[in-house]
Length: 132
Image (cartoon, rainbow, N blue to C red; front, side):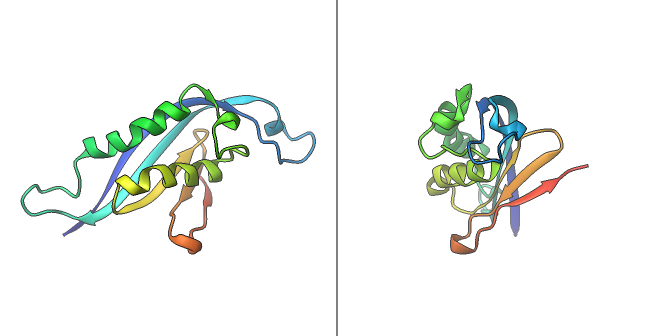
């Protein structure tokens, strides 16, 4: 049997987007209450009945949380242009070595806008989506 696990986390962080057009509101310093979901896909182990213990996902997330929560994202190494797309890829790169079966990182920067990143080598394309 296969299953997908999803674990949601939150951070509060500030950023500005240095590569947007002149006058764009996101060029100004602002903050978000980011909601971040890490999703894994895998085979349910017959003995445990789990794909993975949720505590293991939380443990992989802990150092990422420490690096991002209540921070100015532009100062975080590798996030000089901290768009949701770049943030999703950055998180993927940090947690993937500890989470076999990582399928998706989703970043909600507002209640209505999100970015999904499914890092699959060179074919990975971050997709923006609007939730209504």
